[in-house]
Each structure stands twice: as C-alpha cells, then as structure tokens.
Length: 262
Image (cartoon, rainbow, N blue to C red; front, side):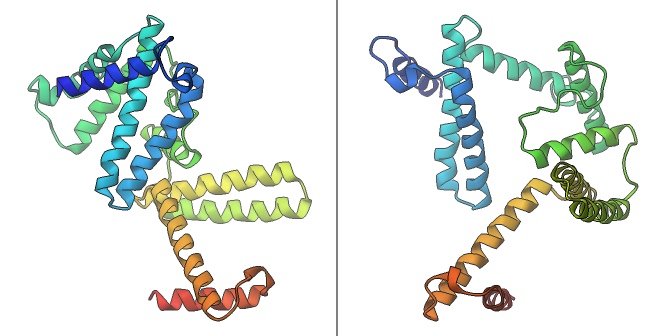
C-alpha cells in the first residue's frame, strides 16, 4: 500500500516538474483545479447511484488524484504535503471518536451524534468561525445540500417544525407568494419567492427523513428515462421531429410511457 501511494505521489511530482512535466499540469492553480474536484466527487456519487462498482474504482482513483494534486501544490509552496493531510485527518477522526479510541462508553446514537456535534462546534470555535450555529456551512455546497445543512443546524437549537405537516403548509404558503409575485411582474421578487419555495421543499424532505439532493437526482433520472422512452415511442410512430408536435400530442405520449412503467 505504501509503495503504491509513493508511486502516485511520484507521478504527480513528475507531472508538475517545471522542466520536464506536463504543460497542462504545470500551469494549474488551486482555483483552476477546484472545479475538477467537485466534478470528480459527483462522478463518484453517480457511479454509486448506478451501482457501477467497476466504474466506482476508477472514479475514486480520480478523486484521490485530486487530493494528491493539492498535496503537490502545497508542498511546492511550503504549506503542507501529503503526509500532513493524512496526519490531519487521522488526528481529527481519533479526536471525534473517543468512544472508539479512548475506550469511553459509546452510548446510543443520540449521545454519539451530540458528542460529534459538540466536537465539531469546538473545532469551528478554534478556527475563529464565530458563535453562530450556522457558521462553517460551506458556501460552495450545492444549494439543496446547503439548505439541508442550514436547516439541520437551526434545528439543533429548536428552530424547526415539529413535523413535516408544518413544513408542507409552509410550501403551500410559499407557492401562494410565488403566484402573487408573478402577478406583480417583479422578476426580483419572483426569484426570491421561488428561492423560499425551494428552501421550504427541502424542509419537507428533511422532516420526512429524505435527502433532498438525492431525491432530486432520482427525479432527474426518472424524467430523463421517461423522456427518452417517449422520444423512442414517437419515432417508432414516424414522428422524428418532436418540435413539430403539439403539447397535447407530447403529453399523450408521456402519459402512455408513464402507464407502461406501472
């Protein structure tokens, strides 16, 4: 294992070599690599969603390579190296799991979660992130994931609906406000109200024990599957150009596909 990691680090160093390296790798910066890291993380999640474990191996390798890339740039600038990254995460995991490594009584899930959150709160304070329970929720997270995390943070201090029923009523309220903004014709107000509606929808998912991001990903895949089947159905019927069809014809074909999936 150690040999393989060293080989990977050596490959990365060669790619970044100022004289004999790859021109593309040489010119990369923290900012230019960050979008690729996000993309690779999503490709890992996608492989898991599809149950493609052969592909998952490759995607995890690509994600690991991103970490190695950052480690190389950190070493070049005298900031940190790969060993520092590993040391930091090892120290953090041991600190956050005293019930495992310090042989404390683990307690139930609620006790473990509370201890975990208390430790994370101490870590945020040590980083000077402030006293707000919302501090430290990364701005760069996808909006649905960030909404879920913000809501969970607020819920820790009791700012939450008692059940999903209240959240669903809030969705209905926000939908009414979207309609009102639409009637007024203010694009700025409309954007704000649609944002509130989406935020409320995330609340519903959370209180129902669902992951809003995952639910939407599955919804996207379902729409994609049904739309492509609709295209195939219409083409078999001699209708190659969907743009020439009326909405009624498209809806009729759509409903046929839905019925066929039941």
